[in-house]
Length: 177
Image 1 (cartoon, rainbow, N blue to C red):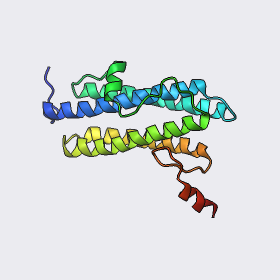
Image 2: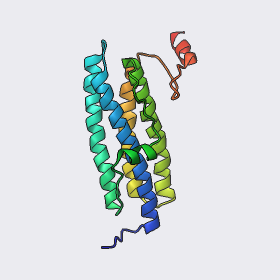
Image 3: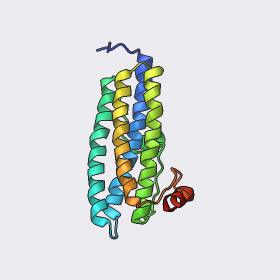
Image 4: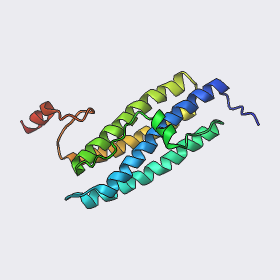
């Protein structure tokens, strides 16, 4: 049956392509979050272990919502590791077992990358594809990632760093002055 929701097939395909990029990044972030949940050690073990459980459960729900949004637009969501890796902007770190603090930093960096991507996708789905429903949906996802990033940043105990992962010594110096 054809779909008639006020978006052309080309517009729906453009939005579906964006949603599949969102899905790919979310899936990689889910994998990283679960892996860190399993591997974390140290004084913050219990706190991070529980926080990451909350995060991966929330990511699982959002992944399902993204895939269902793709289907609502009569598209098909990615569903293979190869497809996720090909479409993701996040990178894996196979065989690497960082410290708890480095795990937190890496997850913050990934959430911030997703947030930046989502900001652009919100504009693109609204302006280029005229799909305000998906724009609103992506805004909600962005807000959820902003909250998770904020929670993770709180573990860094005042240590400031840029999205590249390097410490921002100027901010750290200004805070101590």
